[in-house]
Amino acid sequence: MFRKNPWIIFILSYVILILIGAFLLFLPFSHYGKISFTDAVFTATSAVSVTGLTVLDTRKDFTRTGQIIILILIQIGGVGIMTFVIATAILLRRKLGIGIKEIMSEEYVGKLDDPRKIIKRVLIYTFSIEFFGFLFILLSLRGSNVESKVFTAIFHSISAFCNAGFSTFSEGLTGFKNNYWLLLSFSILIFLGGIGLITGEEIFERLIKRNKHLSLNAKISLSGSGILITIGTIFIFIGEIKRWNAGIFSLLINSFFQAVTPRTAGFNSMKISEISGLSAFIIWILMIIGTSSGSCGGGMKVNTIGTIFSYIKGRLSGFKDASIFGRTIGNGIVEKAISIFAFYITVLLSGTLLLLWIESENLAGTSIFPVIFEATSALGTVGLSFGITPNLSTGGKIVIILLMLIGKIGIYSFIFGFLMRKREEKHYTFPKEDILVG
Image (cartoon, rainbow, N blue to C red):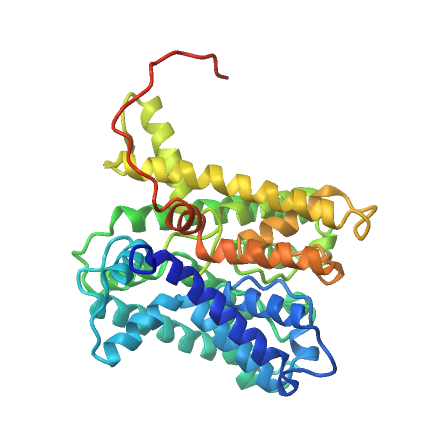
């Protein structure tokens, strides 16, 4: 079964990693006081899926050992467990199976002609960015009343680049809203981790080899991310301008940061429960779209939305196929993007309905938006919340755990790779008949 369907191994590898992480976090040396195993599983899932939703306080409830375990889970989950599997196989001089190559080809946009070269570049890119991020964060913490600045800088550099959203600050980054250097450092790390590891590697090659052209995938990732961040910054700025007590420049920086982090890092310099309805709605949309394909983050992905947009644009412009940047996108990719969109919305609505049903008494008096916001944050592996996460029942936590796991694995991998792997290609069609739409 495993040889015929390597995606089962891919999914089980994350499940096993989560269970190992939960077991370690549940041990007495990892936490203070008593915690339930459900909360340990929830925290491990959130770390591996680089979500950042928490039912426990990372600083107050976990020891330094527990925080290190969470950090390791974030790093493995952020870069991708299959990356480490291939890296280990390479070190042990083992051959890569066809199944692993197929999965990695999906993860890295088909660029797996030389797996060793790709994995080496990805790891060098990851650890280099995280190292420089550590230095920038450490410098930005000078003069601040923060204990263990070195560990704090390491933790947040990895968490930000991997788009995890975990923080050793109990109130997130709300206490640093005027530390512009820190917010910009986080923003850069989140952006570089969210545009896709292959895209990031392409950018650095482009800077070194000025004659190298960016791929269509990289162009869609960069342009889409830039547009979303710009739109998000503008609307959040407008939504908060009457509420903000500091200066205009401070609001601009914080609006920019809050537009970057929903895709899908989950850090916040503004209290989500206190922001305007306009800002909350824009952040919700950004969480649904998420980061770029092949990145550390989740969401429906910029490339998915870009493909659907290019198809609509192409049809309106008179082209039969999807076209963008002077290139045509294959029909197979368009069909895949539309399928991901449909399944993503289906899973999101299903998760929201389950939460509303299970937590009908626990969240009595709470409007529907915080609940669908919570479900979106989990499925998009974001980590932003209106504060209802710690109040969820065991059933509600299980729903969030499943949404985070599906969000990390990916809708396409979970639905097509796992559930519909054995479907047969049909070589016939049914009679055609038109219907009314719109």
